[in-house]
Image (spheres, rainbow, N blue to C red):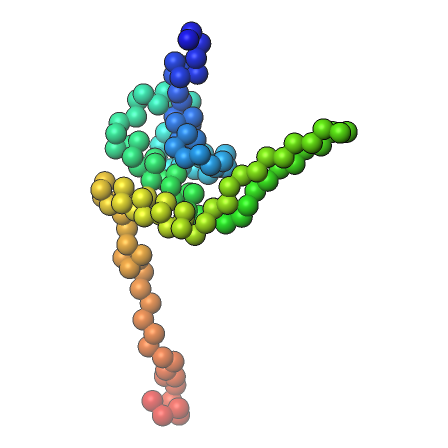
Length: 134
């Protein structure tokens, strides 16, 4: 099995792309790696278990934010036709990926609750000028 793809050193980018069997856009992959301070061409063997897990969480979250559409590509040339069909991402898939991502983020202390963000309190509208009964 000399020259087998399994025997070759995987880059960090290939590692991230192989986490799920989905086509994640180049920009999404680049942003995930940039946010983690990683070089796409570095060998995946330099990644520690924590970073690998957080990369998985980032990919799961990217998948959870993908549109729910069915993708298919059709090619034709004369009498020859070929159709490739991708799967459909369901809301159940998205919930699963999001739950998995949040679980990993919590495990490594990177989980931030939505309620921890800025809060807005409605106080009503008050007119503070003279003559308006204030």
